[in-house]
Image (cartoon, rainbow, N blue to C red; front, side, top):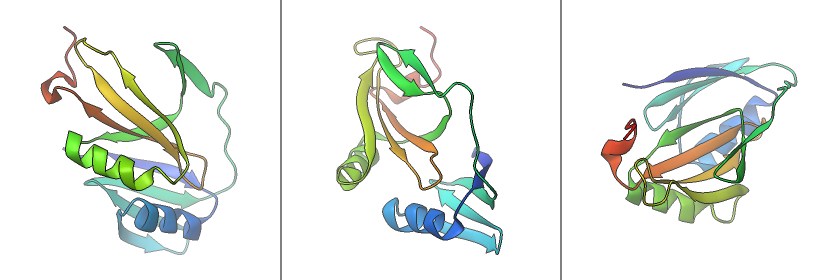
Length: 134
């Protein structure tokens, strides 16, 4: 299964460049006021619009302040590590290990796109604990 999310965008060309050149994602369908990006089989649609604002920009999890509004993908460990190495010289906001030695242990890093959206790339120590409560 895949997800689709549609988001406002302030500059389509900068957005296309970031996703296709910086992240290496594929460009999908597009028009003069929108574009689709294939991010690991998931469809991101960016619609040209103005600025946006969110009332609660952050929250705290395990003593880390994280962006409240973000989206992301869960990758296998080797793909996550390769992408992290590739993006280290970019604007990585933070890299953190969460829930160490617990169910759901994972590593995440966050990066900001040209529209100010925060993207989380996450990998789980044990892949079958992605949705586990115990």
